[in-house]
Image (cartoon, rainbow, N blue to C red; front, side):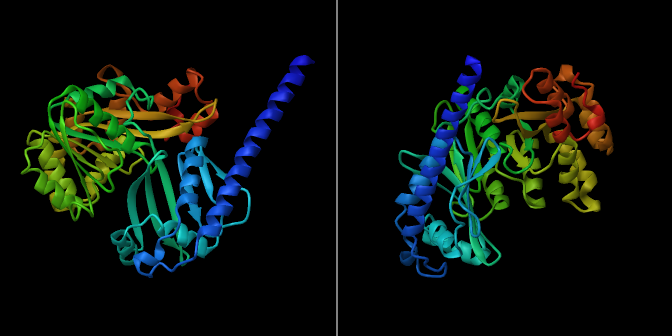
Length: 399
């Protein structure tokens, strides 16, 4: 009986704590709304400057709550993403004028012009005492909307991201292409940052990154690091990669391979003695190979297959899975470019890649289903969660 009373008391205290957070967030949102004058997006930059103290309080509150994202959308209250789940603020929905004033307050004149031209803009910014943020401001249903991603104060390590230790070997490679794939928000940028940090700590190399925008800022340690931001320091990824090849780099990070020209230049760089790190939006490792090939016409695919078979070092597909105790944990699929894998790619037998991964654990490979099954056996996730996140349920053996 006493344990029941204690449990009820703990639940009551938890309710008070959460309720207190909600009221605090509601107060911040209310103050933020009162500070917004509703200036139009097309107004001169000076007219869009508003008092950002309330926005800073909102971002500080999100950081205190351990949120990964803040959503500011007209027609909905300010919403935090905590542990993968959305947590709307109490109170009324934001109006179009309120979202417009909030979001334009973080834009520079150049970013405001880009928003007007392209209807969307990506940026990163810092707030003293709060942290660093990645943001996207865009249009939807005739109004402005935006999202803020809270970036860790320190560059993460593979250990802090709960990624397999064998990925450290990728940071020790001298040349080749390492691809990190997965859906938006699965931690690809964090994984790349952790690999660059390993290189920066353990090797004396010239590292050049091309990002849109720059998310993690790396301080020079053993290596010398240059970070190029698309839109600010360079016009696009493709021309930046071509230019980098003349800058004597050892390691090149390309934030995303978006077009055939960038992909072709990346493959050439990986073939010619550089370690290249990049990302693709695919769900598994086999899809990454297909996505690269499908970016080119049939007349060029044989050449690209040959290049990819020679240049590829590894593909890591990842996704963040909700755990049994709250929060999210990465599940990964790893394809290593062994001689057998290179031969499959060269001969066009991409459908055999999954079998090669599932039977090559001794080579450091693992399928998404094997990764999820290990997490179930370790008690990190439930079988239901594993089934919801696997690509081949018939291959999930979690018992």
